[in-house]
Length: 467
Ligand SMILES: [Zn+2]
Image 1 (cartoon, rainbow, N blue to C red):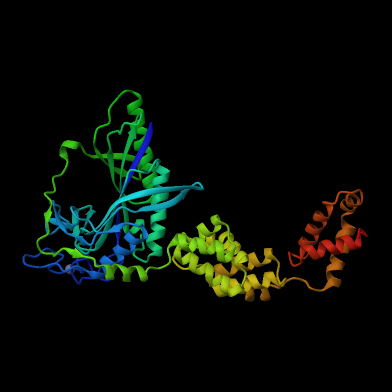
Image 2 (tube, rainbow, N blue to C red):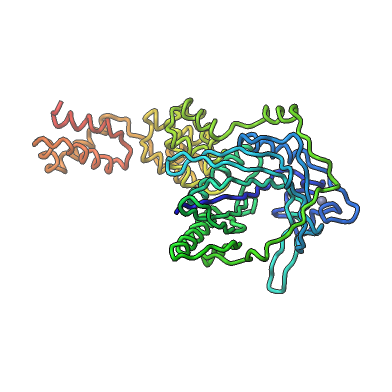
């Protein structure tokens, strides 16, 4: 038995205005029904005009996926009745989508995977129904916001792989600057279909709608995979049905059976001319493409000598990759910069902006490299700097965290440690070289981490007459 998964992904494009009118597309925090006009409210006689910018952002995605952009694509009406759809139809592309083919490569547990894309098209979003205790309300602000729909081939082999594919797609969309692709805000949404193939024979597909987090994608698919496998093992048959996913309860919710399938009565949109993407236009979009995530990852390995794994984590978010490069410029040491960003900064980085400026971190790293401060104390200062918003070097200064540079003082501390730890000294003399480590540790404790361990080690060896 083999699991076969395909995804349909909706991505909200980051345009200033909606797909067919001049209303603002920045609806997320706007009061309900304030971003509307006759076009997006579907008033009789109002005519749509295609947003050129939305097409260009969609083309960026198509080019990055290596898809074949169609010179001529066309819009269709998808008819259905729903309170958040004032026109009674959605403008989408069905017969002649914007782009065909393409693929996305990504890693799952260090294994390289490729999922092919079947097609990609442009469409408008619907409004929103808001359910309250005293009934449902409708907000039309989202009506007409531009989306691309990306349909994959059924190349995904496990729920986890589906999650990682989506993650890689989000990284790509963010690097392309076409969408913030925030699943919580609904800027990236996913429907999944899944079947189990037995002895090479394709199974019956079921669909899971509106998955709005990576966790939901993986959990819902795992639940359905298990259900189908158990059913088939018992000799049962899978029915073609559609589920929703109740994230809170962690279970699938049956939405409709096959006989209830919609007939959307698609027909060509008569109010829009076919979309023609000329070679010149496409070439211009290609010239303006931002650096792709895998190109950037490769450059990080080549230019900064990072491991593929570290580079991969840094490029996951473009803001993270930008920050890393700023820290490199500020301290001049790509390896150290990667170490600090990956092991310290990421755990504090919660919102959109980094927890501490790249310049300030760069100066702290420089202070560690030049031996002015120990790594341990630098980390302590960093933690305090992040909590207080102050400069870490100022904290180092104020709390006297910089390293003791006075040889006399270090020697005095070492002699004290030797006097207080006769057992360790005896061990050392009996040939247990690791006893030095214990003595250095004691001296570090006495100096509150303000000594250089290598230097202390040399001093101990001198005192104990070992060199
Ligand atoms: Zn409008």
